[in-house]
Amino acid sequence: MSHLMFHYHGQDFVARASGALFWPAQDTLIVADLHLGKSERLARRGGALLPPFETRATLERVLAELDATGAAHLICLGDSFDDDLACAELDTELALICGRTQVTWISGNHDPAPVALPGFQVPGVTLNGLHLRHIAAQGPDISGHYHPKLRVAGQRIAAFLIGHEHLILPAFGHYTGGLDWDDAALRALVPEGRAILTGTKAQMVPLPLPQLRKRRLR
Image (cartoon, rainbow, N blue to C red; front, side, top):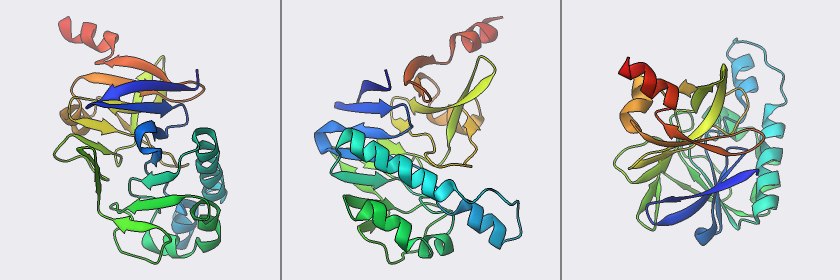
């Protein structure tokens, strides 16, 4: 199965294997941390030279998720652009998405300044009692920022984290790296609950993972 339905604070959500989140009752697709323009930003600042395909590839993945879900509204949970200058240089690419659906851009730490974008630009959104923001704060909320990953069978896999008060999305963009769930910052937000692994299919696992529970008991 390429997606998995779950319940969070009275609402049904669908975790897509791609790392996108679909909210059927709101007809809304939610993505976090696209980091569009990262290769260009690194080159501009004299950093590592990365293949400059990630912006187009990420936008094509977003379009594929919009096609698959039929969502009428797209919410981007911040760090949609790797910096504000990268945002200003992507008019043509953004037209692919903004020309077909309503888009809400939530500001992140990489893209904090207001720029001329089609759609709505806001610091956060509240829908049905859930706060959508870039960085988890007072819950219940839905956020991104940390690019969470789990170590499973020797691999680091991007994952949704679902705790009592926080639902944290994996990064949707290329070249985004990630923070392991057992890092103190993420364990403080989601000490236990569930994770949904992304990849070829969405798969739910408990948190802590069974092997971590056994290790702490020894």
